Image 1 (cartoon, rainbow, N blue to C red):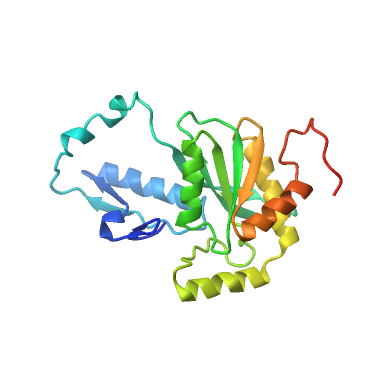
Image 2 (tube, rainbow, N blue to C red; image 1 turned 135 degrees about the vertical axis):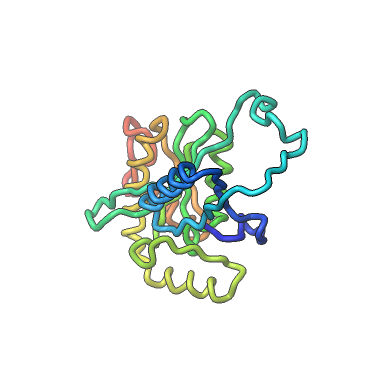
Length: 220
């Protein structure tokens, strides 16, 4: 979803491509991207292109999974979550460990949306065995927004979104995310956040059920 960029690394070498050899493969790729696009507000920028010359990777890249005990990497995708107030659905970035299961962890954004850095945090926790889910909390303002805090224009846009943001609605969306994540994980769910997400994490500890329902909930 970020052309020529992966995290803070920039360049054409970080583009996403699907190469096909015949029309059947091209059609399969196009239909797969169309299906993925239906589940996210972010524009998928993967390029579908006819394969040209093929050059085998270096020897140390060969049979990578076999050398790593057949352990695949994490899996990730965008999903949709129903808002608890019935106002619609919002996107969330889901990252799962190689096992496909584990305790749940809600990653709460800063004021820059579900940008590459937030997704990298979710990916890291998935690599540690968590099922990580990062909801788009600015969806009522500008769904799918991704901002780069190193750019002045993006920083100002983040502050503008923050000024329009309703904290109470944000906590309700976090509760909806927790509820959804219980069905995607082992059932135990925690949460953490950064900057704005730190405030929301504090409020969520008091206002949501991000702990086993059998445990008592403190008065708020």
